[in-house]
Length: 496
Image (cartoon, rainbow, N blue to C red; front, top):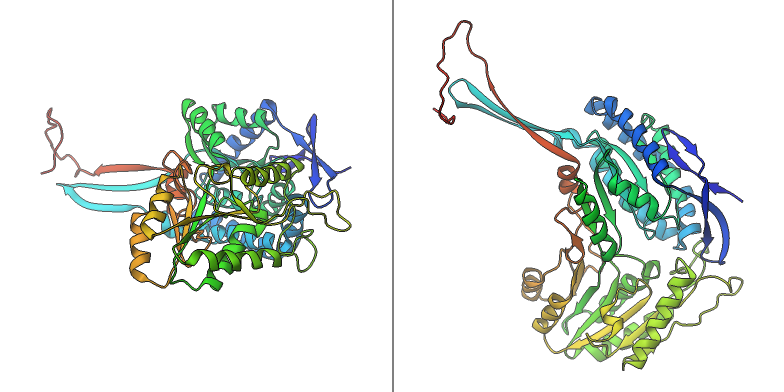
């Protein structure tokens, strides 16, 4: 059976311990992945520190050339990488291609860092004195990334970190680890020096080693809120910068003036795409006033039209969940919702796919008359379950969203510009879509939520990514004339 190794200092490195990697469509073990610990992390940090000595001194031209070459390799090998992702995650190949594209956009942003990294200059701030500033890389930085986007989320981190002169250690999810090694190979082919990009697989032992290692300057994390809080606490306690993005409970508000067919179509895709295993998935639809009954009926019809099957089968809209435990958790939540008084409009439990009876499949589920006290509303289910909450007004919908502990993404479906403006100004959420169900920003904006969806104050990629992976220096300069006599003052310096 294939074993997926670490990638340290430009070469595969085996691990003493391994864990299974499953095919979610069949339920069968398809590979083993190395499980790293403190020794593996230390080896990666040592390699990265050595590489930082030269990479941080490389020219912007050299870094840009590597990024352009890497971007082209991502284009040329998109299909191969997409199928690797689909085989281990379960999402459709088309969906995997989409995540590669959104990750590649960050590489394209990194290709233009020569302009973004320009500092500023102030002439003659005092007599004969000038001031300028510039930004420098931190050193060795690490990324700890989730299973749901094994290519995209790491690509939101390492291109910017590397292009700004840092060296990088990636700890991907052990559930779908192969994409990380594949990307490491592409970097090497793009001309990236060995040791600049490293991969250490594993679980908690590898994570804790990264969080506490004195050679790691910063940690980027995306995952659940409890783990985000843990990562932030541990890493900051050990003197590191931290980006820690947590969970979500994303709401879509539908007003009576909206095109209900349009709204339902996009909400269905936003709720059930990738089997709901997205931090930006729509898990709650708030139906306002008279929109409710008609919206639920259209959503019911569209949920039945979702084609569920293995991710590599043409025509599949939604693949399996990542593990058997994930499927059990989601199907238990549907049953609990029914017991608590929700109406199960569409029940996706117990779905079997011919030829894939042991796969981790569940169908789309649609719950109506959900209240904010129910577990189906309060918990982040991370599965293909859409809950309908009914309210009378837009203001009630806004209050409901603002009362939720998460603030990652939200959407409003309406034909009213006034309603849209009121919504986007009042709602306490970091990313907002107006008639856009999954408002993931482009690479030249930053990605990050509010409240329990972002622990700390560092969003990811875009301008915030550059600030996170660099620190500023300000230089005050005087060049006195030869033999010029100047009296040094003992008072605090001021401008003259």
